[in-house]
Amino acid sequence: MQTSSQTNLSSILNSLIPMTKLRFNPMLVLVVSIAVLFTFCSILVHGQATRIGFYSNSCPQVESIVASTVRSHFQSDPRIAPGLLRMHFHDCFVRGCDASVLLAGSNSERTAPPNLSLNGFEVIDDAKSQLEAACPGVVSCADILALAARDSVVLTSGLRWSVPTGRRDGTISLASEANNLPGFTDSIDVQKQKFSDKGLNSQDLVTLVGGHTIGTTQCQFFNYRLFNFTNNGPDPSMDPAFVTQMQALCPQNGDGSRRVALDTGSAGRFDTMFFSNLRNGRGVLESDQKLWTDASTRTFVQRFLGLRGVLGLTFNLEFGKSMVKMSNIEVKTGTQGEIRKVCSAVN
Ligand code: HEM
Ligand SMILES: [Ca+2]
Ligand SMILES: [Ca+2]
Image 1: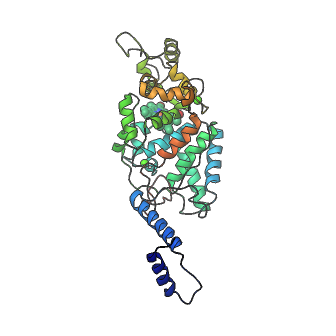
Image 2: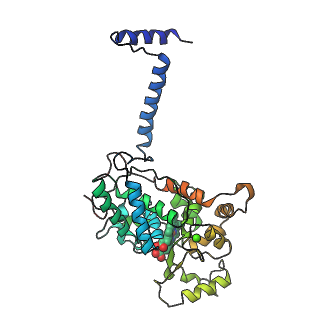
Image 3: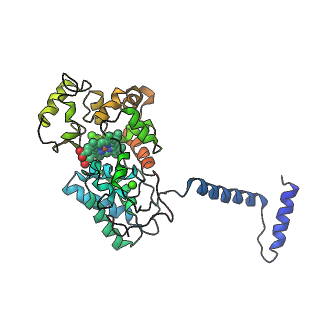
């Protein structure tokens, strides 16, 4: 039913365009105005966001170029897969996912202690130079890193997810800001706090730390648990047989830079073995083992292991969902930041 004011409005609008055959349908005018208003308000409130297919016209080859570059480097050195996943995490937690972690120079993030062992920079540089040849000045380094992290999970038998793109590159990178990153001795409360500061909840925390299902750690980040953790011995949350196994790999006063798997027995495969290891007191990092010790995070570990009946969660599926959240942290879009020409330097 039309109200008299709608009828009046449409007759006024129709009288304004006597030369055309267009006629205003008041309902249509209403729906379109609401849609325009809604879009306008949501841009005002949320800022612009990333979206799937951002480069579908400007650089349709972007995904295939990144994927083939990551694959070819992975074939000669599989360590780049965990390397790129960790690099994306370290990027997102400092100034958002803006490739700040890729900038070289004195006092840049790269020089901060947690970033000294990052690897895979050459993979991003390689993809970037191919993309500059194919679509000059179009694809951001931040997006290349987000895509490369996803491709790394796929290459290690994880599930694929769609990566929204449209990030722009930041121009600032400060070593001092890398203390935002969680540390391997952090309590669960501190871990939760650092994640919630970035809009990530406890489930995201457990899921994303599940990224430790691939890759390695240096002995120096956990060997303090193996010997004099307490007055009379190793960390009591560790399985004694596992302590012996780790002592052999990381002897006291041995080489602290030696590397061992974060997920014993499955360092190359994106699976739930990491969570079984936590359940069995076989977590390598102190911060990882606490995900099982603490009841509030343990429930999520149990859900990934199918130990909570209908509350079961599929790790590989949840990982993609939490990664989409993580890779949208404080993103720069639209006219913010820039599209770097070279990923290690601002334009
Ligand atoms: C409480 C949070 C976290 C802490 C304390 C932590 C700490 C660490 C430490 C100490 C290492 C060993 C680094 C080395 O020896 O070079 C490491 C490696 C790694 N981290 Fe984390 N991490 C956390 C969360 C995450 C998240 C959220 C991801 C990804 C989504 C991630 C992915 C990785 C990967 C893949 C490696 C292996 C790197 C390689 O083999 O090159 N981590 N992490
Ligand atoms: Ca960043
Ligand atoms: Ca694994």
